[in-house]
Amino acid sequence: MNSLLKILTAATLVSGTYLTPAQAANSLEINGSLFQQIGGSTFDVWKIVMPTAGSFKVNVLAYESTDNSTTNAVDLNGDGEFTYIDPDTHFWKDDGSANSLLNAANHLARCDDIANNCSAVDTPGFKLTDLGAAFGASDGSIHYQRDPAYEVTLAAGNYLFVMADYRLTETEAASGINTSDTIRNTIVGGYGDYRVVFSSDNLQFSLSGNTIAVSQVPVPAAVWLFGTALVGMVGVGRRKLFATA
Image 1: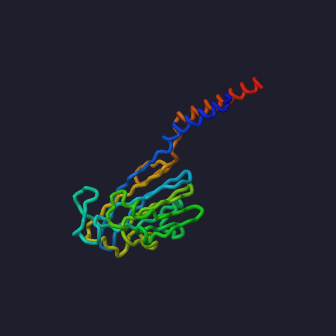
Image 2: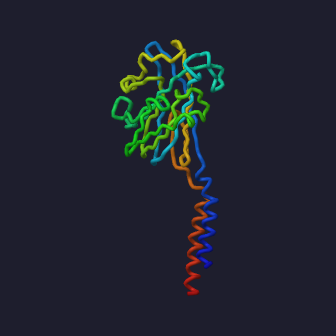
């Protein structure tokens, strides 16, 4: 085995060791509550900032019953209460205006349930894929489809993630209230809690207020140092090969 081949073989083994940490999964959990009002229910808007394109998974935990009754309720978040938000999630393009929800053209996708009211989207700048019941149950969801779980692929840009109770229309989003909606088993003044986990193999998340910043996982310093050293090693190897030719 010549010197250059030895160097490249060693590089392959070492790079396999050092690249693994950069590929580790990252996740972010957000929590909130939707409130029942006389004219309907509230909805929450979370801003998502994507400096570069990427994909991540969305897994919702909210409906605390195996069916629609209080008889089979389970306290999933451990707060001593039973709540019954039927999550209706949406993605909108944030156009930079004071309220991007006023423009229906900004609406990108809706995902209400697993395998129901969650149509696949495949456009150049936005994709959505339902991940199914098995992944949906991985966060503790107990209803077979109420809590949606899906993956999105976004182009670089700013977005809005909207959490509502079933069902929020684009007109209602623009008005600021989920008109005539009643959260199941909840009276006026009551509320329901929800939890959403965003996760990715190659993205990392940070939260400030209601803004979620999404960025690429940085390559560990050791990898950059190794890469620099590798270039030097290959250069030396080439010089030695030419010298002995």
